[in-house]
Amino acid sequence: MASENTSSLLQPQESVSRPKMTSGGATGPLLYAVFAAVLGMLQFGYNTGVINAPRGFIENFIKENYDVNSGTIFGVIVSIFAIGGMIGCPLASWVADKRGRKFALLANAAFGVVGAVFMGFSKVSSSLAMLIIGRFLIGINCGFATTASPTYVSEVAPVRLRGAFGTVNQLAVAFGLVGGQILGIDVVLGSDDGWPWLLGLAIVPSAVQCVMIPFAPESPRYLLLVQRDEEQARSVLTKIRGTSEIDDEIKDMHDEDHAEKQEETFTIPDLVRIKSLRTPLIIGIVMHLSQQLGGINAVLYYSSTIFINTGLSERDARLASIGVGSMLFIMALVSIPLMDRLGRRTLQLCGLGGMAVFSVLMTIAFFTYENNTTMSVFAVLFTLLYVGFFGVGPSSIPWMILSELFGQGARSAAVSVGALINWFANFIVGLTFIPLSDLLGNYVFIPYTILLLLFFAFTYFKLPETKNRTIEEVTALFKK
Image (cartoon, rainbow, N blue to C red; front, side, top):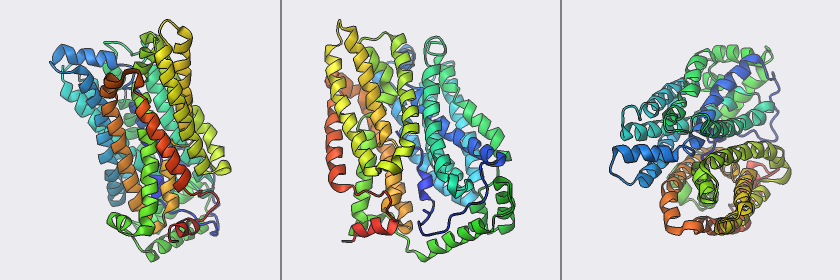
């Protein structure tokens, strides 16, 4: 699951020794701006979860109109979303820097409307190409949002609320995921006539953004440090903070900018060439691979299929799938206070270990469900607990850890590599799960279990704890 906090990590990290900016609080204009931005993250969650329930209806549509393998083509429809995400992530960084955060959000919202229209009208047009193009376009939209939305939120939020507002991105993703799964049940839009509406409803978050973004403020950090328009930056900051006492915050932005310019900037080839940068890069890449190749998107994209294969009816399988998104939503709330209390390394190990255990138990349940309703229930329970352990650490830590392993000069390049790897691994899982399931049957989660154990071992031996350590202390570990 491509994460949600991709681009907020590109922002300067406050040093523990710097004075904290304390101006303002959760004002009306600030809440409006944050809500408008995180609709993009809700869109990401919705389009991750919405493709799950209507698989059978979409495959029937393919069979009725084309002489192709419907399962393979459905895998393409699912995975092309991640290819779009791989394009959207770097595109967002470029547009946001060239034209501003507000313009980037608005342009992306308009793009999302186009993608939703393509998907919504694919059936009435009897066009498989429209459906695939629509998923690709909405993938670009969601990849763009995972960069642009957290960046904007982190730049408009006051420092003391930045962590809290950062978690809103995760909650929006989980809420969108649950929403897509609820709308996919048979009594709502989970039907042969309803699935185009189900996919087309992706127009709603983007359309609301198109209305709201023009009235939202531009990022004051962008105005001050990129546009060099201090007067406008002060005006916006005064409005969203609800106070005119903003001098300290303006000064801190200038100090951050000065510190950035003093630090050497590293490119992606530098990360590979320099040993002290290559080691944390490898760690970060493996953390991103552990998020995706542990099989989580096999569950998010295909949970209805998985539950049907354990003996549940199609209706019950769709209802059970709602629990997957709900579990992610709950664990997003639970993991917030644990992150700084237990540490990144501990939570990552706990999450990977728990996923490995429950992937084994899922496999056992797959073999024993026949004529055994109890084991069908346990198969669902084990799947939900597998998702729950994913939410403990692997859901968010890979996005966070790269920003904590690198100094400011190398952070942007490192996070970009991590995002690309994450989306590519997402694509691989989405594309290969159906043929893997056909090949391995009830053993389908065994490859993910093996990878989870390898990722657990790597994390245990290679990932340092970054809790309560400054960036300087962490980077020094790799220079020894």
